[in-house]
Image 1 (tube, rainbow, N blue to C red):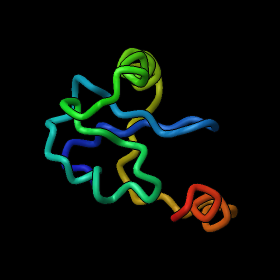
Image 2: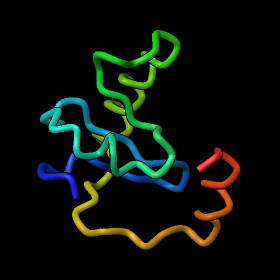
Image 3: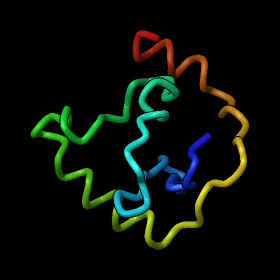
Length: 82
């Protein structure tokens, strides 16, 4: 669980608030599909996601409780090779 509740979610995805994030890195190993990068390791072609995360997290409520897995979570992880 994020110690500062910097995650926000809509019907498409989960966003990380780059302002609230304290860079504890707990989410890096917790993400089941390795979709979260440490800012120092962020590939250049994904840098635009910082702004998207900032914009979306500003208007969405923070996730404060553990969420249930999506019904297709196992199939999606398998499709990504996990």
